[in-house]
Structure formats: C-alpha cells, structure tokens
Amino acid sequence: MKWFALIFLCAVSWVQCYKILVLFPATSPSHFILGNALGRGLAKAGHEVTVLSPFQDKNPPKNYREAVLTGLLEQNDKVTPVNLFDMENMHPWLSIYVMNFLGNDVVNKTFEHVNFKKLLNEKFDLIIMEQFKFDAMKALSCHFNVPLIMVSTIGANVWVNVDTANPSPPSYIPDVFLSYSSKMNLWQRTFNSLTILVQILNNNLIFYPAQRKFVQKYLPKCADYDFNNVSFYLLNTHESISESVPQVPSAINVGGFHINPPKELPKDLKKYLDNADDGVIYFSMGSNIQLSKVKPEIRDTLTKVLRKLKQRVLWKYDEDTLHRKPDNVKLGKWFPQSDILAHPNVKLFITHGGLLSTLETIYHGVPVLALPVFGDQKLNAAKMETLGYGVKLSFSAITEEDLTEALNKILNDPKYRENAKMRSKLFHDRPIKPMDEILYWVEYIVRHKGAPHLQIAGKNLPWYQYLLLDVVLLVVLFVTIPIILLYIICKKLCCSGNEKKKQKKE
Image 1: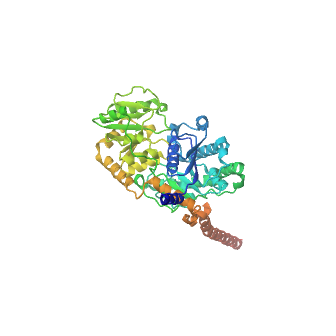
Image 2: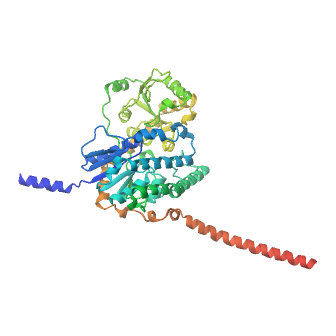
Image 3: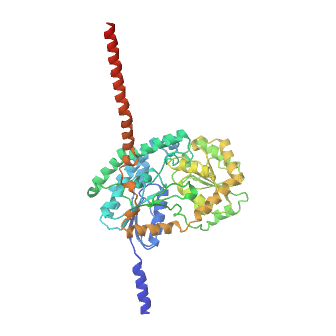
C-alpha cells in the first residue's frame, strides 16, 4: 500500500498545473464560443483557468473561473457604428476604419472595468487572448511577465501574418475583407495588394499609436511593449475548409477545437428530422445577424422560395413569428446547430458563411448555400465555391430566380455533397485532436519560457524593411536620379547650343 501511495505521488508530481488567463473581450457570441471551449478544455486538463469575457458559462467545469465584463453587451448596442446589413456593400477600406473603432472601444471599456482591474494584482503563468484588434491588451504579457499565445478567431490574416513574418503573397492570398478566392485576376491581385498595404499602413501609423496610448495610461511600466512580442498563434482554421498557405513554426491550425461529438437531439427536433422523408434544410445566419431587421422584400423572397421546396426547413429566426411563414418551415430562436448538422436527413445548410458554421458543416459533411454579409464571411463563401462544396449569393441582391436556381443546384447535383463529404474526411483525418494539440503547445510554450526558438528572423524586422519598402525606395532613387541628371545635362547642352546658334546669326 505504501508503494502504491509513493507511485501515485510520483505520478502526480509530473503533472504540471498552470494558472492561465484567457482573454476574449469581444462582444460577439461566436467569439465567446471559442474562448469558452478553449477555457473548458484547459480546465478539464487540470489547469487553473480564468476567462475574461462579456459572457458567462452557465455550467462551468472545475478549475474554470470567470471574470465577467458586465455591461459591455448593453453598451455595445448603443455604440455599434453601422447596421450589419449595411456592411455587405461597405468598401473594404472603410471596414478597416470600423475595426479600428470597435477595437479601441472594447479595449478602453475592458481596461476601465472593475473586474479586469482586479486581475492585475494576481499572478499567472500564461496569457491566451484573441487576435481581434485588441493589441493594447498584449502588454499584459509584460505586466505579468509571462508568455503570450494569441488565438486568431478567423484563421490566418494580415494581422497574424505581419506579426509572425509569415509569408503571405498577395498574388494568391486574399485579404480577409475581400470576396476573392486564391485564383485572382490582374485587377483583383492589384486591389488585394493595395488593400493589404492599406491594412499594414493603418496598423502602424494609425491603429497601433492609438492602442499605445491605452498601454501608457493603464500599464505605464509596459509603455514600450512590442505588439509583435507573441510566443505562439492558434489559428481557427484547417486545410479542409480552405486552400493551403505557408505557415511559420510558431503558428498551428486548430480549427474545429470547439466542436464536440454530436449529442442526441431534443425529442421534438428529433421527430421533426426523423420524419422528413424528403430531407431537411437548416437555415441560420449566425448569432449576430437578425433576419427580422432585413428589408421586407428580401425576407419575402426567402419565404416565397422556401415555400416551393419539398424539403422541411429549420429556420433560426430572432422573433417568434414570421410574416407569411411557409407551412414547411419550423422557426426557432436557437437550435443545437452542430447536432442538427449531424443528422443524416439534413441535405443543405443555408448560412452567412461565418467561420464557426463553416467548420461545423464540414465536420459533418453538409453542403452549403452561403449568403455572406460582413467581415470574413465573403472570403469564406468564396472558398466554399472554389472548393466545390457550396454556392454563394449576394444577400442584398437576392432574387427569387437566383435563389431557386442555387438551391436546386446544390440539392440535385451530387457533386456538392460528395465534395462536402470528402472535405469532412480530410477534416477528421488528423494525427491528434485539435484540443489535444492545443494542450500540448500551451504547456510547451510555458515549459520553454515562450519558446523563442520558434520565431523566424523576419519577425524582428521593422514593417517597412519586411515589405522591402526601403529597398524599393533605394532602387527608385538609383534609377530616377541618373535620369534627372541626364535630363538636366541634356537641357543645358541644348540651351547652350541654341544660344551659340543665335550668336552666329547675329
């Protein structure tokens, strides 16, 4: 018995428990889904986790503590700069300004919040936070003197690629605010290059200086903190839902870590899906978009087309009633989305193209009709169409004919379901589950004090050197200066020649 106790104590001594602060201050439910899943996974592995967010876990596990940013959701409703439906046709460069505004607003309110201030006197071994224009909060790594891991909720993008010096040629990697695939024409490659350059200039000349002021005000000892000082990146994407891109050693794809194996559906839903002889279409535009606020003519178009289908339709709708609701439509303010997509009778997913929904539909192998509105949704929709598991339509320009044609195409052409199933196989064929991979790297980063050996040399270059702007300027000077000098010399020679001719004539 003594030997057993000794062996047990030795085994326990090898298990290292870390205190981890998880920061997901965005006021979007989809962001909390990721932060909550990450926090729960770390807590179940034995770590002491504190999650800072505007949301709460209704049934938190052991070792999971919450610091709730109370009031942020209510305040956010008052300061949202635009209607989400208006963002569909917003110029991509204007979206950059909107992100600046939202990032500064959330950071300011978070630093001012009493529940955040309480954390500043505690000790942690690691900070994990979302990469979503909250860069001033990265300085908490300096404040607590611990490594920092970032979670990119939208996968690799210009914010991540510049920070990590990850190769991201604009010739085939589109900016997150554009609706391009990897196959771009000349105009698209040109506009993509300009958009990425505008993003970089905005960050370094406008956004970072504004974020720096928050650091100077709230964390003055870390006023000079380098926003690129990140140990590791967890990217919420996977090769199965997108084209493959270059990736540095300090970043890994862990898309789908929030997805759990399907659970049994509530009895009423199970009966509804089981008895659908012609199948079911699941229709959800995510957690932020409220379809009750869409233009009446667009909503009427949706109901007209859905009424003509023989399939049943589960429609996630934010109100209890829908004007002229078709008989084959069942409304609900909330549905267990992933569990529904797992049902064999689900034939199609009509979605806004959010990344979590994209990951879930590929997890279960269900084809997609994407109606993107804002953010990365257009980019995700373009990838769906390029990879052959979905069709995209412009939400604001929906017509009865186009919507009917798109639905019939996906429902009747087997290639869409076959491609979705093939992508699902790729998604599941991994050497290790994404949550287990996260656990390994989280502990690895702490063990190796930030693992600086994973960083590549390009990360230490100033942004203008990384983009070779100084080289371009040098080349331009070397080319233009001789031309200007030659022009001046020729002009003087011509002038002196003309003067001599005039003198001879006189």
